[in-house]
Length: 354
Ligand SMILES: Nc1ncnc2c1ncn2[C@@H]1O[C@H](COP(=O)(O)OP(=O)(O)O)[C@@H](O)[C@H]1O
Ligand SMILES: [Mg+2]
Image (cartoon, rainbow, N blue to C red; front, side):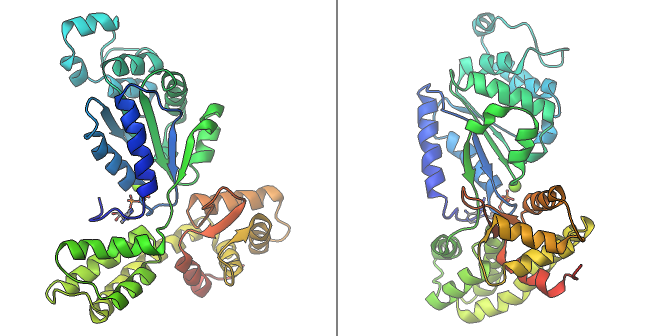
């Protein structure tokens, strides 16, 4: 968890309401899918939610990653593990009328397993990195969630990169489309400033307004950069017990270095996929604009691909850039924004043209 979770109040309110309803036995209307480029705080939101469940008595929570759910069988064993059975009284076990136990062959359906567990207590299942979920397990889980979550207090929350949506589509569970989609993107100016200021303030260290403005701007509201910069400033401001422009300038050296490493990773990633010229063309298209329409994006991609690229090739490149978080849709519109604006500068500076 970051020292201060900023700018997610709306999501937090929404989750608190759902948890309150779950505690009262009310089924949620749908699954929740959190998505956004990496480094924007999806894992942190899940961690917050896991903590929050503790304030809602009776509600239980399971938090997993796909590597722990490699098959429907593993899914069943995670939902009804040995420890859970041990907490059941003999009469509860009898009431469940289920003879299966973990470690035995062929578990019952995901629906039966979930139903058994939720009969004892409302449940929240948090699944991070869901864009890597095994398709067969995902299908079983989503189908079960659709059925169970309409009747019983069961909430499934998936978090993943923007390609999570196409990953779910490929699983062939069409009804996941009814899930509530929550974008997790960069922080607004005010939230970025809060994220940087509050930890110092809580430690009794004042932050000079001009230093705060410069810090918020340098972070670009990208939560990963916010923490990187905040930690650096913390090291330099600690002894002075005051955050000044000078402390920021000291911290900036290390910050720029770490950012450079980060950009280089992204550069290599594009290079491995042979997408540097495409990345460059897109970065150039963003030079004077913060938002690109679908057509403008495709034009840029086409100009970065080899001559006469097919529509499929263009669409595939767009999808890959979005999977990488290089670009993404921050609103429910056919428009694109950079995942991190300053990465565009880096690519413009270093990427070779086609
Ligand atoms: N709302 C926020 N306020 C402040 N810092 C945040 C916030 N969300 C995320 N962070 C920080 O940003 C970094 C990336 O967060 P993380 O949850 O790992 O992103 P993701 O799971 O989307 O890749 C972490 O250092 C985290 O502490
Ligand atoms: Mg994460």
